[in-house]
Length: 408
Image (cartoon, rainbow, N blue to C red; front, side, top):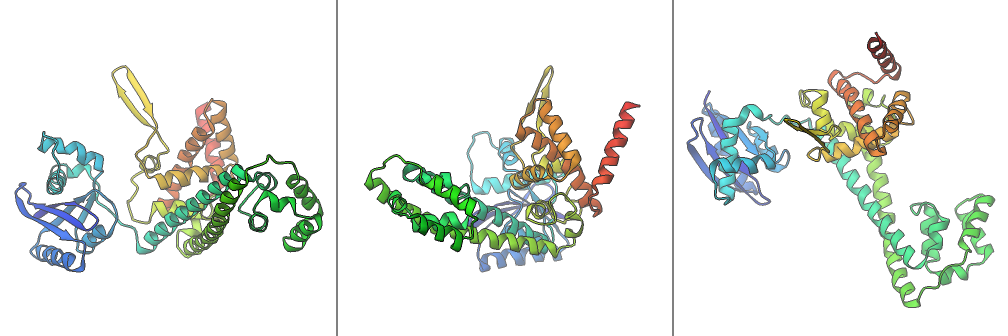
C-alpha cells in the first residue's frame, strides 16, 4: 500500500506540515492555521489522499492536543516523538545548528520514514478515560493552588502574628480561618475576653471544653512586639489570602467529589477499588486515569515502571556502571504512585514489611517508597491487563511460595 509520511511541527496558532513519500521525496509542504478554515482545508486533503488509497502516518512532538485529535479523526496514524530525540536527529540532516519550523517538520517526517520500527503509534483511550485523566490532573492543579495559598498564609503570619500558627495545627480548618478573619492582629487578640472566646469556640465551632482550654492557653502566650506599619500591611494580605484559600478549599472538595463519582461509574472501578485505599478518595482514580484503557498501551510491567519513573536508569560501558534517577517519565503517574505507596503502608502487610526492609538496607524514605511503588506497579499492570481485582491474601501466598522456591 502507498504511504505518505507527515511531519507536524505544532504551534499555538500555526502548525508547519511536511509530507514526504516512501522514497523520501517531498509531496507537499504547508502551514496550517489553528482555525476552522485552516483545519478544514487540510482535512479535505487528508480525506482525498485516504480515498486514493494512501496510508497517512504523522510524527509530532506531543501526544495530545487539538491537532492530534484532528489527525486521529481523519484516519492518520500518529506517532509521538520525544523532543530530545528530534533534537539529536537534526544533526543527521544539518550540521550548522540552524533551526526553523519547516526544517523541524521535515526532520520529523524523515525520522518517521527511516526509524518507524523504533516508534510506537498513539493508541488513544476512550473518551470516558480521557475525561477522567483531565479531571484527575485538573484536581491535582487545584490542590497545588490551595497549597500555595496555605503556604503564603503561613509565611505571612510568621512575619507578624505567630500565635494562631501555634494554636491551630491546621490553618485549613473552618475554626482557624474564622478566627483569623475575626481577630486578624495581635491587638485584636489582646482585646479578646475569655467569655467571647468560649462563645466563639464552643457555641459556634462546637469544641470540647478541654480543647477550648488548650487553645486559650496557647493564644495567650506572650508574643514579640511587631511595628504597627508591618501589622497593618500584613493583616491586609492575610484578609486576601483567607478569601483565596476558602475558594481553593471549596474547589478541591468539588473536584474530589467529581473525580470519585466519575471513576465510580467506570468499569475499571469494580476491580481497581480493591487496591489499598481504593474504597474512597481520588488516589486510585488518579492511578487509573494515567493508565488509560487503550488496548496494548502498556507492553509490560517494566514498561509501566519506566513510564512512572519508579525504576532508575543504568549507564554501563566497560568497567563503568552508573545508576541515575529517572527524570524522563510521566510526572503525574510518578507523583500519584508515590502517595499510593505511602497510603498502602497502613493497608497492606507485605507493603509494610517491604518498606521496612528497604529502610533497614539503608535506603531513604523516598527511595523506599519508590521501590515499593515499583512493586505495586507490577501488580497494577496485571490488574489492568487482565481486569482482575487485587487480593491481599493471594499476593501473600505468592510471596510465601517464592520464598520457599528460593530456599529450595
